[in-house]
Image 1 (cartoon, helix red, strand yellow):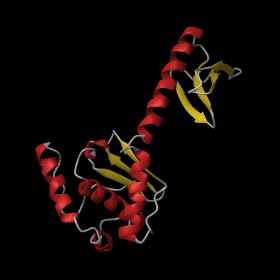
Image 2 (spheres, rainbow, N blue to C red):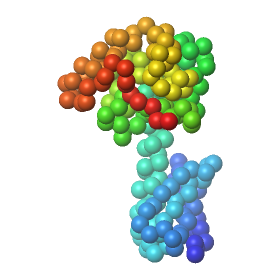
Image 3 (cartoon, rainbow, N blue to C red):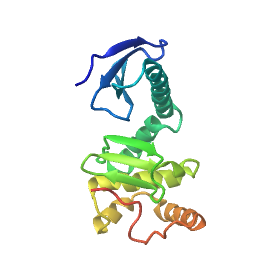
Image 4 (cartoon, rainbow, N blue to C red):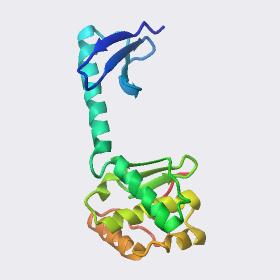
Length: 192
């Protein structure tokens, strides 16, 4: 049975912190923001010293994650960029619910889950030419309108003028990195 939450005052940058102990939680610690408050979930068996260490670690992780999203080239800028590309090439019809950089895509440049409206781009695209990142964003935006890689999808993507150049660039990077070859009719698969 979960025990009562405890309050910890942290530096003002973090706001109030509420620690919730749970008998069901065995090994994992997690944290999230709820308004101006941070909730940290820990196993009930943890000592006060472990609690303090984990609260500090989780606050640092959350701060780093939030900072990443607000820096130039972060998730906020990426989402704004996707919005501009949707307006320009898809008449604003491709409206993702979220667009973000991820570090767990090592064999894809991007992915899309049309049912949820989410787009993720591999961190490996950072530092590549803008037209390449724009192509991958357009590719994933097109999946919000046409989930597969059929003729309708490719017709939509024809609106982006640097498609072939960007595909060539990515194929070159993939070949250099000894990544799997990208067949001409399939790139950066979407999740359905």
